[in-house]
Image (tube, rainbow, N blue to C red; front, top):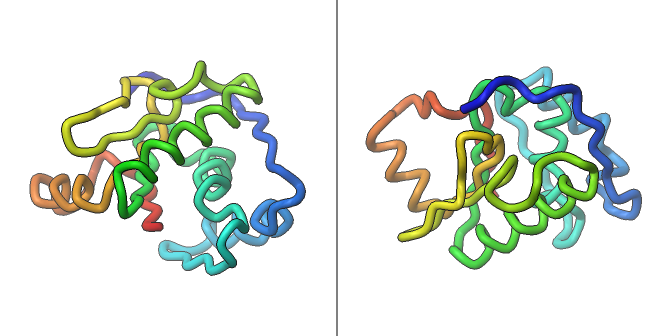
Length: 141
């Protein structure tokens, strides 16, 4: 991994419930080791939580891991988050600040801070490193 990211100016779509509760969610993440966020489908949990973590300074020296149950979901969510961050001038798209790893495909780089992956990829990493030292945050979706 390369050095820390500069201070980030990340935008959050105002219409999403998670964006509207961003400060409360950020405080919970900052103050607690484990946080459970529940919300309706389409509330922004999947796409906005990694951005909230980045804004808090997570992922500067290690990765933010984010699991999805299926390969297509891991890839499409990574694309969406990468596009949103690139629109804010953060990263140059998929594989830069945000990447993904699924069976037979690894689209991460040394500059990746958020890694989307299938549950199986995280379980395989857990077998090699029981403390998951590469990560400072794990989001299980």
